[in-house]
Length: 255
Image (tube, rainbow, N blue to C red; front, side):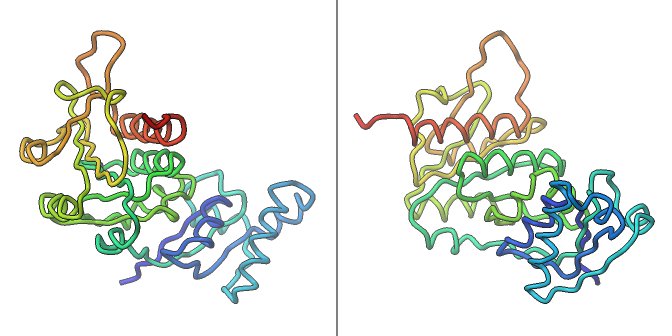
């Protein structure tokens, strides 16, 4: 079975070139577009990518606009695409080799765009890695890469089959387990979010089940300004928590 995928756009291609988790197999570029816009900023950045690919002895194919119309889905590819290898996902023991850090478990996430936006936000906030339930993301990986602005290729990601066993492993390594709960728990802004920390965020449809909540050391609630019974999208909740962690790291003074 062919497990390679086609990605499009300068940001996606360039990020995979700098990723430790997969390789560029073949680079495709629209030679006519590159010549027409050879003085533009976009064209110069594409040329830099081509030179980098040449230096690594990766296969390059000059194609035309019809090739892009036939093979890519979007319209914002900028005349560049790449065939890339299957991603290598990390293992829990690899995460635990490093100094105590902060990891997020995204429970119940299914939409590739939502996942991509979440990874982008958590990467920007400095979160050290993401864990998710094991599933086959192959068919939507190009969407995840694009919506994450390439950060999915830089962020350590672990796919797990048993969340309860995963929590036990992190607890045995002295990680604080924090779960989010819309109605019950202490305010995010009164919580100490220091490493080693493992945060579980539930999907907006199902939330986090009771077993997981009982396993947690602390339950965190994001306070609302007004009366609202709904849940925040997972991406929004993860972003708020991720940047509160960053704020505490950078601006909280030791007591």
